[in-house]
Length: 487
Image (cartoon, rainbow, N blue to C red; front, top):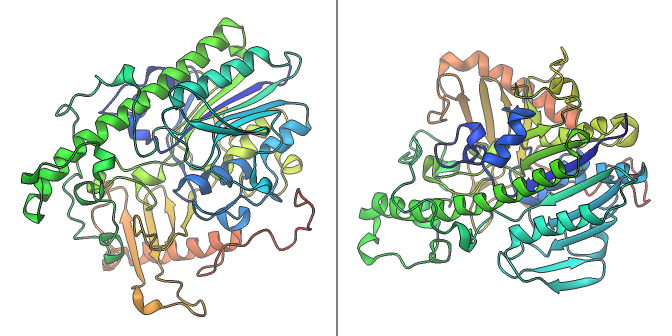
């Protein structure tokens, strides 16, 4: 059989619970759903660091943030770390990237191993965006989501048909500030969007570290986000609940309208594959770089290790191998994507990407979950008390039934830090009895044995991945040489 093509659509901040295939109460995403209906939907996919740039670096390299050099949004991708695109390109694949890159602006951090690429600088703009390619900047007229799809289709039409292709279609949407296109502006009228069950959570049972975050829909969404002034009668602490509901309807209207544009684009790509007879030989993957809070716990944004932020959607279709309608709940992380894509494309991940810390989940897609497949995953968020959201640095472990999170303060144990500014805290959640993560049971004696087991597992995972608690990220693996590929 010829090597399959790969079409990977990656959105930004698209929460799984805003995809109808994942049971969304908010919207319908028929094109994205089609990928899962004709292929597989993975229900337990998690990011290792819930923020845009770090997740994208992990997806490309199969490595954690402390290895690839991208712990936060202002870090530049370490060009010495090899990617799965390097391996595919070296093996003869035609490669292209259109849309969001967000892994640095310098020459060393630009996209590499792509035959053609055109990306947004930084976060990019929704309307008439500037895009950057090998020949410099140019401004394109139109709506960003449509333009990214147009560029991808143009490349497909003009590609070398003798080579298998790996095409990355990476959308800016539905990232803040949630500017919809005109054709979807009548969707989701104000007052029609249901609120999540935890919308009124007062966080009283959570740690003080979490209570201090600035992600409140009521107080941290701005007039620029909402796109209209707050009515004077909703100002003041006595109107917090009413203000939150007023802002929520406008936030979610715009967010969901942006998602509708992505779904349209996915539909256009699937129709092209059908029309050209490419569907059978093309792996189609849809994911987002992390989850997002959609009013859950009264929040927007991500970063925290709570489920809505931690979970990533992942739908995969490849008729040659993946049974239609498959549903799998094995624990997978974005560090596993690179090895899996290589495996599906006929390369041995161990030799093609030896630096990867992930593992191919191709057997899972075949219904053959290995006996030694991990029953836990490790998470670490680095941007301690960033000025915009004030989320504390933390790490943790999630199993099928429990989650342990450590908020370790302002660099405790690092020379020159100021640990008195933060309290070291832990949270423990029983995901079976408390799936909404409303009750921290860290001090409950009934969970003493669970806590001990999770602490041991957390230490094991940190040792396994080579992460050092309280230390900053490495720029590269200490054993790597100085050559460009890190090998």
